[in-house]
Structure formats: C-alpha cells, structure tokens
Image (cartoon, rainbow over all chains, first blue to last red; front, side, top):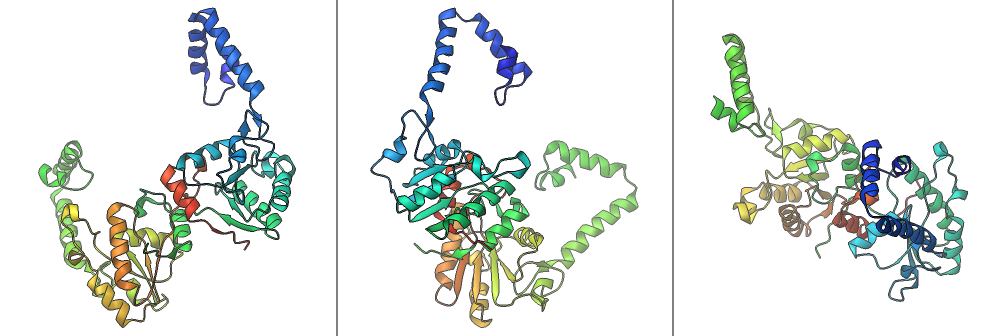
Amino acid sequence: MVEQFQRLPGIGPKSAQRLALHILKRPETEVQELAQALLDAKKQVGLCSVCFHLSADPVCEICRAPSRDPNTVCVVSDSRDVIAIEKTREYKGKYHVLGGLISPMEGIGPDQLHITPLVRRVNQDNIQEVIMAISPSVEGETTTLYIGKLLKPFTRVTRIAFGLPMGGDLEYADEVTLARALEGRRDLDMG
Amino acid sequence: MVEQFQRLPGIGPKSAQRLALHILKRPETEVQELAQALLDAKKQVGLCSVCFHLSADPVCEICRAPSRDPNTVCVVSDSRDVIAIEKTREYKGKYHVLGGLISPMEGIGPDQLHITPLVRRVNQDNIQEVIMAISPSVEGETTTLYIGKLLKPFTRVTRIAFGLPMGGDLEYADEVTLARALEGRRDLDMG
C-alpha cells in the first residue's frame, strides 16, 4: 500500500506511510467505500468525445451548454486549465483539450495529442476564433505555433496575453516578462 | 546609530544592531569613508531636469543619448522602474519618472507628481507615443487613466501588457491575471 501511495503525485515516502497507517486504523467499511469511490470515478469519468475535457457523459456539460458561444474555441493543454479558466467566469466559449504539449524530448509528437479532431472541428463547426491558451514554455510555444500554422487558413487564431501579472510590481518582474509586457503594449482604453 | 539604521527600508531592530556593532568594530578611517560616500552621493545625485530620473548631471545619460528614440516616452512611477526596464535591453526610447502615484488615501495628488512637466514635454518635443508602464494597483490605474486623459488629445497613449508572466503556468495563475490574459488576447503572430 505504501508503494502504491508513493506513485501518486506529490506524495513522498513519509506521506505515503502516514496515509497507509491512517487507512489501517479506519474501519473496514470505510476503506471499502474509498476503494469503491476510486473504481466508480475511474469507470464513470472518461473524455468528452468533442473537446476531450474530463466528463462523465459522452459529451461534456460545457460542450452541451446552449448558453455558450459555439463559434469560439479555447485550446488548452490539460483539463486542469479548463478548470482554471472556468474559475475566472469570464470566458463564454467552448474548449479543446490537447492532452499534453508537443515535446520531442519526451517523444510526444502531434499525433499523440488531440490535434486532428481540433482541425476537423474547426472545419465542420464554423469556428470563428481559436484562442491558444498555452503556457509560454518551449513546448508550449512549439505547440501554439504548430497548431497556429494548421488552423490559420481556416479561422482566426489568437493567443492569450503575456505580461505583468495582476498585483505584480514592475520592479519585481523578471526581464523576459517585462520585455514581453512592453512589446505587447496596446492603446490605452479610456473605457 | 541603531535608531538611524532602523529608519532604512528592510532593516529591523536586530539588523540595525548588527550593523551598528559592525561599524563600531571598524577602524575610524573606514567609517569616515562610508560617511563621506553617503554625503557625496547625496550631494551629487539629483534628478534629471527633463525626465526626473536620478542623475549626477543636470540632464541624465538616457536623455542625452543620441542613439535613443526621442519620440517615445515611457512613463514610470519610480527610478527603480527605469532600472528594471533598462535591464531588459529591449526599450530604446526615453523615460519620464513621476516620483510616485496618485493616492488620495496618502494625500498624494497629481500636483505632487511630475505630471505638468510631462504634458509640457509631450507638447514641445513632438512625442509620438507615451507608454504607460505603471503597476496595475488601484493607485496605478488611477494614475494611468488620469495621465491618459490629459495626453490623449496630443499623442498616442499606450500601456504595457498584463497577462501570464513568462515561465508561468496557466494552472497556477490567479483568476484576475487569467481573465486579463484572455481579455488581452491578440492575433497569433507566426513570425
């Protein structure tokens, strides 16, 4: 059991032992409930067949929601990014989850990601804007540019802004962020 | 001496005592050198009469440099911001240091900042772009909008980008930053 716990992310040998000892002290019914919950979740939650976000149904809630703009698709690497963006309550379009980033170092090519279904979606569903919301790492840039090249002939492709984080002080921003914030400047909107 | 040290930023009672004891152990000539260095710096360094950046000369090096674009002015709150932006080596225009931000809470109004000389500069020197590089706090926004309103009739006013910091992971960005990054999205530049 300790070994199994250690395979979970963020759980080291000590935490694993603590968790295992906790389990041993609980009544058997409780342990059965936990085990069943894991099995049920694994059995019930799959990927949405449209956007590849985690979903208990064949098509996820966001894809089915009639209130959401079907012509805008936000492309993210992971389901966690969908959850982060949903928390802002600002975005009203749909998503497409790639399931990772292109990484030659780790042997992940475009074919291992959900890119082909994205191209198909854009062509079939009259998508008017694809927003690339990918972190600005080397892999992120590669993936953004690869998908941008594929989709530009068919639709408008935008990317999220990089610059000073909110609450961030100019003085404490790293040089690359500051350079990017200056480069990405825009006309002052007097609202 | 301990009391004097304690008035410096980031120096608490313990650090002040440590510094004072260090000074007492040094030879008198060394202490005299330190004291003289403080007095000399204070006497020699004033503010540039054009941009209000710290300067040993009446007009600072950046204002005098013929290689720098005289038609672009980057407005910052403090000399530290000039130093931070210079470190990026990306910006080739001039600066204007306000000497603070508008803050009704602290009783700082526009008249206490170097705003009037900025307006004069814009009108006299054929400034074609004023870049507001001010941190996105309440005071920062107030100051940016106040100056924007003053200058818009005379020149183009832009502001630096707010969004995801470089190396920042989407998942760990706070909600306001993420909302701002989405709102500030731009067309993907395929270079």
